[in-house]
Length: 64
Image (tube, rainbow, N blue to C red; front, top):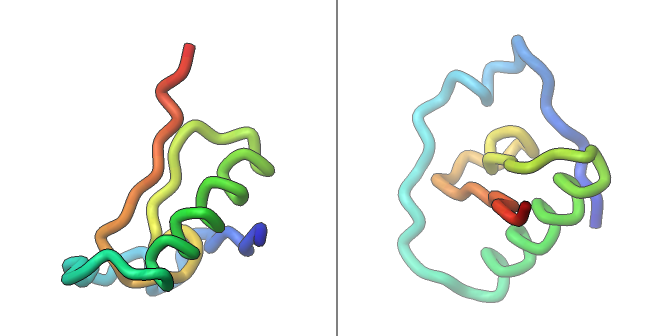
């Protein structure tokens, strides 16, 4: 699912993110959504706060 990208000056972008304690289906779903959102926006990287989630998660496409 493509999520809405949070734009500055949204306060969520200034919050200290929470550590990820375990990898579960919810986190896997978030990561899938983040990749879909990143590709839909022609991006090469996206952090969880940019989709409104306060977690230390980032997705990156490093393919040439």
